[in-house]
Length: 425
Image (cartoon, rainbow, N blue to C red; front, side, top):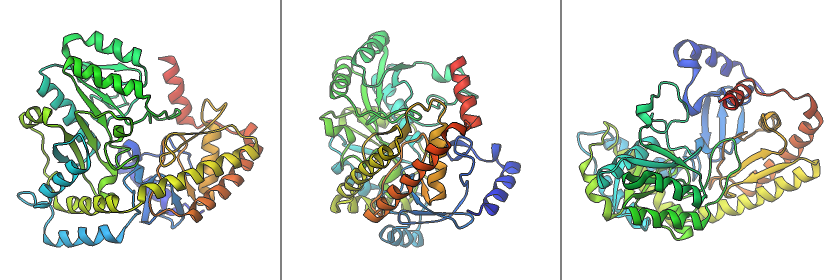
């Protein structure tokens, strides 16, 4: 595969961007052959700056749920853009979108819109404190809730005061949650939970219903707010808040990524019991009220309600999981697939520094399949059975290639250094 344009862009970026790139878009923690820059996306496919084409299982880290450049979404977005986007006030689409989302999400009575997941989770934290007049927020150890100082996984530039009154518990552990709630005492404002355990670098885990129900009970007993962070999984597990699947309704839920099929918008939804707190805080942004993402969200949500997109993704996910497991077994590779089938994570046994996973991901990339070595992935409606067959065939070859080279594989330098640092701590 050609890499000339991408390599040139990386060199230029080093001069004008910190580390050449930042945040989750940095390729420092990806195989070294992975492209950084992309020129086109359509359906389930992605083209890098050099024109190499990939079946994309990252889906832009989640926003692509229907397919890149979906004509139905583009049509309404362009039409609204010609009328107005960021204006002195919001368009009527804001009210309609709030009506639609509160109708779709069982626990929700009101909505607030913003741009990023971090915006929504930070508002949820603030509202929990405003509503309860308490301070402590519980989050599961290892969970990702955004890039603000209170929740970022990277400690650089963060001081103790930024994390004041943020305390940890272990996901899916009733005992750990109960202990954390007891330690918080009369100062507990809220409990964050992800729809399932989708932490990086580790196997995914579905929520234990006993844990989820106990979280609801403890919040009811203490007056704290239960917050489900549905930024990543929203509308990918069900057409409602994800914890509806286990019969638990939160007080607040945060949304982003997929509900406008890639246009920049996120949301915070809440029940009437939190309306006073929501109305008392000041949270805003110049582009939070932009009309184009809101009409795109309205069209996307219409399609999600009326189509079999979810059932289609689940069927493809089951096909993919079975095919990959068969290919791995044939190769004699210890290959683990965890998480919902439509949001899979792939890891290897006996691979503590991820060298096997990185090598396999690179082998898949050379065959035109973009997978991630340590982050959960996503399926989208635009994928087909033929795409899954293509992936399984590529995986069969990649397993064989990596098995043959396994004894000579080298660890990824940045990942190895990161794990060494964590072990030292």
